[in-house]
Structure formats: C-alpha cells, structure tokens
Picture (cartoon, rainbow, N blue to C red):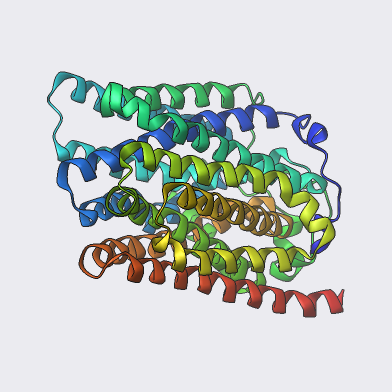
Amino acid sequence: MDNVFESRVNWRAVLAQPGFLYLFLAMFVSLFGTGMNFAGVTWYILEQTHSPVKVSLLTILVTLPGLAVPVVGGVLIDRVDRRYLGMALDVSRGTLVLATAALIASGAARLWHIYAMVFLLGIGFAIYWSTSNALAQEVISRKHLVAANSAVLIAIQGGMMTAGAVVGFVYERAGLGGILAIDGLTYFLAALCLLRLRRGYHAPQTHRPEEPPTESDASFSPAASEQPTLAPMAEQELSAVFLRDLKEGIHYLRGQPRILALGITYSCMMAGVISSNVLLVTLAQFVLNSGARGFGFLEFGWAFGAVSGGLLVGGLVRRYSSTAVLITALAILSIGHVMFPYAGYLALAVAMNALFGACRALGGVLTQTSIMSAVPRRMMGRTQSAFAVISTFLQVAMSFSLGFLAQHAGLPLAFLTLGLLYGAAVASAIRARGLSQPAEVAA
C-alpha cells in the first residue's frame, strides 16, 4: 500500500482538483468556528463551576452521540449526496448556535442550555466528520491522496489555529455570546462553500470508481465491486435497506483486518486528542496559572504544529517508510504526554503542544491516506462511521476518567493514562504493519 506515498506532493495540482478548493475553504471556516466554540464553552464551564469533572462532562456530551448516530449516519452517507448532507448539517448547526447566542445575549441562558447545545452539536458532528472524509475521497484522485489529506488537515488545524489565536481575546471582550455568534455564522459560510463545490445530485451508490477494483475490494465481495448500483431507498422498505447496508459494512470490515487495525490506530489517536482538552484547560488554569490567554496560546501551539506537520508529511514519507513515520509520531505522543504535566513554564508547554500537534498531523494523514487508498468509495461512509463509534467510545471513557483523575488523583496520573492510550495506538499501528507484509509478499 506504500505506493500511494511514493507520488511527489504537488500542491498546485491538488488545489486544481474540481471542487477541492471549496471543500478546503468549507472545512477551514467550519473548524475555525468550532474551535472557538469548544474552547470558549470549555473555559466558560470551568469558570462557572471550577470543576474539571464538569469540563469532562462537556466533552462526554459532545462525543456521546457518536456511540449511536454513526450507525445510522454511515448508511445515510453511503446513500445520499454527501455534499447535500454536509450542507444540511451546517445549516442546522448554525441555526442552533445562533439561537443559543441569542439566549445568552438576552440573559436567559442557563448552564443546561449550554450542555444541551453541545449535545445537539455532537449529534451533527458525529455525522459531519465521516461525511467530510467520504466527500474528500470523491473529489480527490488516488495519486494525490497524501497531499490532499495533508491539505484537509491544514484546513482543519489552520481554522483551529486561527481560533486558538483569537479565542482568549474575544472571550475577554465579547464573552461566550460573541464567540457563539461567530461560530454560527461560520456554519452558514461553510454551507455556501459546499454549495459551490459542484452541481447536480451525486449518489454514492451510483458512483463509478476511477480505477479497477483493488485487492481489498475483490476479497470483500466481487459481486459488489462489479455491481455497485443499488436500488433507491424509495423503492424498497427502509428497514430492509438499512439492515442490508449495515450488514454489508460489518462483513467488509471483518474481512479486512489491516483496515480495522488502521481504524483502531486512528480512533485511539482521535480519542486522545479530544479527551486531552479536559487536561489542557486544567493545566493552563491550575499549573501554569496562565488563564484564558494561556489556554489560547496552548491551542495555538497545537494547531501551528499540526499545520507544520501537514506540510512536512510528503517529504518525510518520501525519505522514510510511512509506517516508521507513523509509529514514531505515535510514540512521541505517548511519551510526551506522560511528561507534559511537568512543564512548569507556558513557553515550554506551548512548544511541547506544538510538537504533539505535528505528530498528530503525521498520524492523521498517514492513517487516513492508507484507509482511503484501500476502501471502496461506496463503502467509505460506513467504514468511517464504524471507526467513529470506536473513537467515541474511547473518548467518552477517557474524558470521564481523565477528569476524575485530574480532580482526585492529580494531573501526572491523568496524563500517564492519556499516554497509555497513545501507546495502544502504537501497538495497533505495529499490527497493521505486520498485516500488510503478507499482502505485499503475495502481490
């Protein structure tokens, strides 16, 4: 599978892919608003309650829908036009966030309103993330997967980086209401970008692949590879269609242990990234004593490192084995987070977080590229959604555990637990490498 990583990164060619620039812009502005929202709400909860456990509840609420929603969402993503689905999710989330901002501006908002908004946003996010990855696979040619995934990650982290740079200042001047107003508008702008991405209705089930079926396709189901078009949902009983598509996705993953190992690697990494926010805000407040601005600088450092890692990944995988780069990046995340609570100065903590961001970028690009190069496009929604469920389960468990440990056992033990999660990602990546070697020999 490493042949995907051998093509030279050509940024101009990637941005020239039809519709890709609009996808890039949509993800940038959407994640800019999301970054401001999550950082602002996190700080607001800590400021109001002074409890890391309450902050961990926030993270649990935003991720909890991912335990169930992707089961339905995966089938939906592989059935309807992914562009229209993304637009509908953006408009719905934008309306919700603006309504909450209006409640805050009127003085009628209560803490449970914030928690309810976060939970509903989590429902949308549980579908949106897999939708975006599946849509990206549609508009990217196979030879540009590394560069395109790097560009997508730069769009995500670039938006987060910009948000991290300004969120502390906006919070001090406009409060949570101002932050939510900005976030709501970014969702509508992202929907407009997706509207411009292409024209017409494109159902994933009728999409013809640009290359012959891969070995993974053939080993899954030759009949499905040759006849990707299924009857529209309106012509069949919905429950029967849903169950059939769900069983098809489960059968596919059971027959692809390497893809499953890559998905577990990615899920462990994403669970660590999301749940670590519980510890990051606690570190800024109680160890570094840097307040909201310090938390913003830490977020900025992470995003800056992630953008840098996205720019460097193409050169690294041309000089070194992609699996070696992946395992090294995950190992740095594991060891580095164990040492993180002992960073006594804000500058050092920001530098460490920038390194972690770069490693997360390398891990994200390499795992997503490997998955996209192996999974058929018509199966991408269900595959991504299955990994989203695994990731969400880990996020919920880790968020509660980290919040509890930070409050009752201290930050060092909480960060040690986070390091062990990244260690599990290392083990899964090593397993994926071992599973790929027999396939390469057979080929």
